Length: 109
Image 1 (cartoon, rainbow, N blue to C red):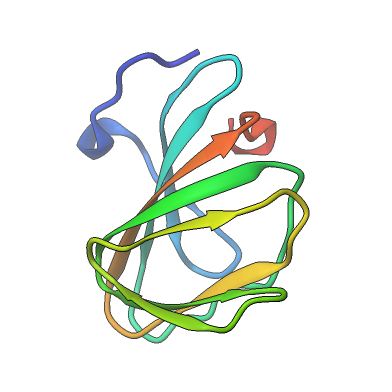
Image 2: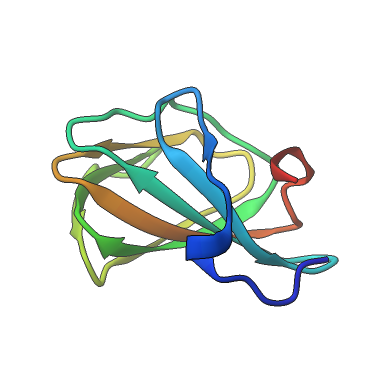
């Protein structure tokens, strides 16, 4: 359990697609994570059993999710990903996302 976190004090972990991941706060059932991407990056298409809700802090992305039309999102936009649904993003500018997951992503700890 990590109750309080200052993102500037959390060491980033590089993801396979080159993003930086910072686990901010988490409890028994909910986790908050910051992702930082360079411009012109496509994340790998993936799914997971966790529900995910996210917020675009800065940047511009195409949000691609199985069964949905691709949507261009900018700072201030949010998105929801149900359990086990394929999804990925494409960035057009340096981008920061904040994602919440439930249950927590044990693979991120």
